[in-house]
Length: 302
Ligand SMILES: [Zn+2]
Image (cartoon, rainbow, N blue to C red; front, side, top):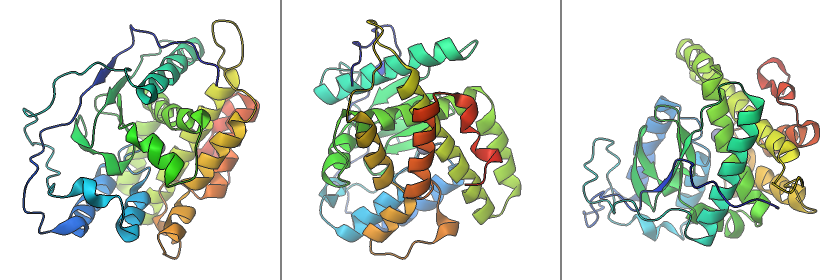
């Protein structure tokens, strides 16, 4: 991708690693953590906290790579973060810098698109920390917290995207960041609130179906940014091959694909982000039209 450097005026911080208390017994094992997290994530319906919820399932079933959790069993949002490394420099690694560049580009674009646009914040963390929506855990994948309007990202996810999910490349990473910014757009336009209210009256399956529409709209918004954003030289940010990279990522993190790779039969009622096909369809729609009005997933047949 062809991106300008990030804007140092943007609200970006590196929270480092939170003081979650490592060295506990870990007797509950990973399963305990998983099933403790599931209802918490679903109950809170965080924008994208569940982006890789099923990925978590995959992690558990696939085994390797889980050692990063060993000993950690707390997911209590009230946990004191006094052990956190205070404010390390942000945007200082290659992965962080790229995420910062995408973040700044999305802010420039959406500010030109939406009257009264308020920028979200971007918070990097390592392994675990706290967010305005409770615990931030790497295994949750990147997420947007509507309560503090910040995106939480452990850039280690970019490596997993490439190595575990087979979606390498800068455009795959940009899609992830732009998707989270898409949730911010939904928050400032009031769509998130509408959906949350509807979900409170809905069954679990209906609530999940609404969540899928939210996620697909965020995918579409990511595509709109990629289509329309220009760098300071007036060039499109997308280079040859970038669309394929982004589509590969959308394909890799579809609910059905994640469940299959975890050795499970896909259960559509449990989907919260949409199938690989749906995610590619809506990302493509944004990428091809560059028009946010084409992202009305709530009045479309999916
Ligand atoms: Zn999401």
